[in-house]
Length: 236
Ligand code: SF4
Image (cartoon, rainbow, N blue to C red; front, side):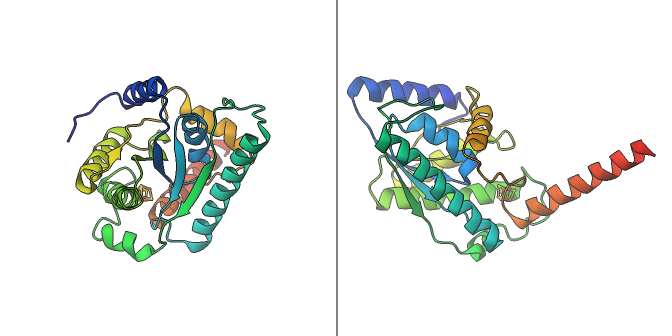
């Protein structure tokens, strides 16, 4: 397994190499939600043939899960319309942008519940998240290999809340296990996170305020209540 590194720089270097060789590798891009996908797709679609892989059994609330898949599908529709009409108004894209496909993984929340057993009360960012990353990246690697993709990676590195080193190391490990290349990334760099917020506004995307699992939702609710209480106390 490779050690920690500047993953954004490594990705830039790989893209430069593809450009020189005139290659457009096929990539399976694991995605957690439409807002995080917005920048990653804008950035990558000129250099790769992308299939967005929606695999998130960690979102155990079915209505939340389906809402996020629908938004990912709607975003891809918007991006593909731009390519068809060659209309890239307000986008950092040009005529080299390529069409994007969507692939939905198996939605079985018990896969997540089993993977994180015993770690339910870990705070966000802890060991529960490591298991959650492993589950989603392992399935991404497995599908990428099975379907003959050149690379796989994940949009998760765009989040300032998530550890890019941990994600890249897990991605590399799963790539080695299944014999498919993991594309290094740290999408939050180069103002990627900021751009994802701009694009979310542009397309009116649903932006949830919690990561995905019921535990992260409860944590966020608790934080909001504490903040509310603090503000009330300040006013009194
Ligand atoms: S907080 Fe996010 S990354 Fe961590 S376990 Fe929950 S859904 Fe997975």
